[in-house]
Length: 132
Image (tube, rainbow, N blue to C red; front, side, top):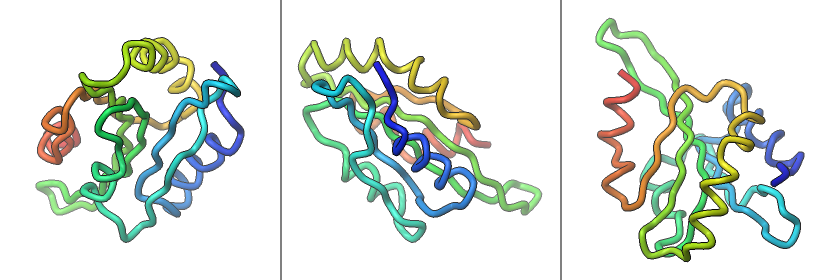
């Protein structure tokens, strides 16, 4: 499975320039590559990301989580989320599972990975706990 150049450059804009709050990626089965499906601007939040994930199909997402530490320092951590709902097609689940490591290897600077099969698996509290 390949990774589209646009996918890499969009991720770099999120990571380095803070142009995006999140990026949702999908696998284009015809082209056999990971492509950008949706981006969320800096003013969007985690609820916007979760709302943009399909209920019955798999996706990858990258989320730039800003938070303040107990020492009152502003921090940012980048999360890689594998969204694989239990109701999605088995073929899709297999495709996303087998392509994940190759895709992540193209994205430098991922701090944490989360795999979710339902919304509770990627609740904002899960993100907060992992980041702190």
